Length: 177
Image 1 (cartoon, helix red, strand yellow):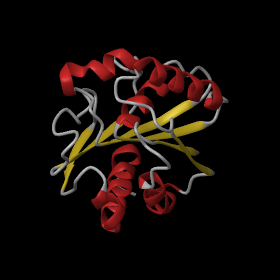
Image 2: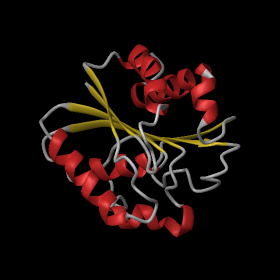
Image 3: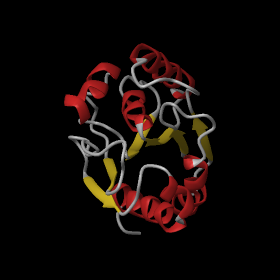
Image 4: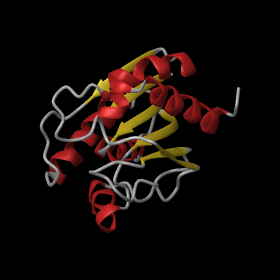
């Protein structure tokens, strides 16, 4: 399995998914863990986000099994990548603090993630998140978990959050092994 971590927008070498990497590697033992980000993309550059997700689809639609992990806007982009894959199988989607339904779901609708195939989704919300205060539950989430976290700093400074995200994701996607 290949884990593809997709960072949110306005990131410049965002360390969040690197911080999550050891926990996801312990829980899932992937063949590969890659991090993708569209460095410096702004919040209203929706056509750029669509192009980025299309590029990821083309790059990773190679017949492998994928676990898509999206942080912030990367969660919406992870869902968008899953739509339209013809050869690769998506084992699951993990979205961390993603604004799925915030602002009436404009990001979800515009980037093209409204109609997802039957894929298990687990979404996480930061209880003290100052940026994505609501709307983090994906409408098709199998499970939605609220963490005692802000949007960014806690994910870097509290290793237990990374462990919780990876462990709970594995439980939802593969049962409590």
